[in-house]
Image (cartoon, rainbow over all chains, first blue to last red; front, side):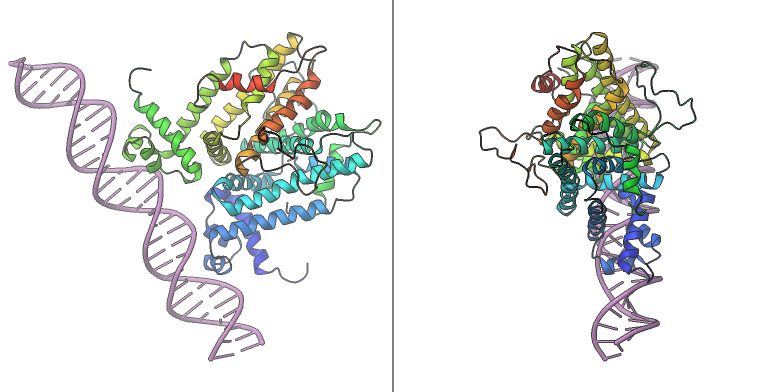
Length: 240
Length: 240
DNA sequence: GCTCATTGACTGACCGGTCAGTCAGCAACC
DNA sequence: GGTTGCTGACTGACCGGTCAGTCAATGAGC
């Protein structure tokens, strides 16, 4: 925390900022160089190709997630699950985080065309589903959860949260409204009170907790709070 | 069906094939031109810019989905919902469909950077969530479903299916295995029997049906079959 | 029924800009 | 003096878009 950051770290930070600012599709080596106040040539000095650099960045990001998840491995299962769910909530002011996740989603779409990216995606997928499965298993053992199909539940939860995130970040703003073509029966529409309308990811996360997690809780176990989950995972430090 | 297709149709078909073959990020005007055996100049004759062409294509695709959904508007609610869920199932041999949806996902990631694309995405989002909300409303009215929060349920269902699709198409192949890092307790692992391992989207669709839809069915209503749902939406014609 | 003008569909060649990657060289440290 | 870290100038490929022009069909004038 005291000595100056290594060149590698500075470059990774440059990639991070450049991706946020331009998205993956539009980002150039020059953008990245500018963002970390280095020359484009330097990037090529450390990484032969743009692909090398981006794969390294993906690796860097996923490794960070692994650490972040590991840090909570000993939390009690119910809270840990709420933390996981809350991790996917994007609040209305999380503009940078949204921009970054757009770039990540762009990267994901390159999976089918790029073996090395795909490897990282598989790793990330394993991490996410594996983490939920792990939480569920230890929760079942501890008597927190009923005996459900662990893999199936993990897949269901992760898919739901991922889908909600995709919707929120690609449609920007996130909130807009609730009704589609149907006028609906008046619930959750009016933000007439003081509180701001919850974001899309938050609404889905809440629904997932009540509709997917709640039913698998063992007798007498209380539904963990999403709110607590959100800041349990956010607390530590910033760079997602 | 008898007269030759219009130039516009041929071009849309060219875009469709070119996107499947190259993805959105890599597709060039030349690729599209080649794919419909026309010259690149012709594309610019009909559409001023590449962006114009792709926005027109998105519009074309969504309009098609609207029609497809409308065609089932009078099916009974439970079957209609199963049809919707089944619509998101990608079987193992649906390579072309997967490739196309990768391109669509790439297009979606451009929403934040492109107003006109975003408009189409909003339209598509409304269509999907609105359709489920509509199904739920008419189902509640008909006594098929309990009185649930329609918007919330629609968002939950759509997010889940979308997330499952994203995972399957970006990770290619789709099936691989079930276990992550935990070795798991032996279920759904061995395809020792004759049947092929179900795809990821299929597993999640089944789970969504059992874990999200089943609990909202009114007393005595049977869970509709996913299988029937899948081919109710697929039957009609081919071009998704 | 023939000619000629006009138009819409379409093409090939070309231009300008962009961007990943290269290379020769420079400074600093051992 | 060699190695490491780093830079600016440069290059080659690619791609969106333009433009001058071809060709077939249509229709008016005689």
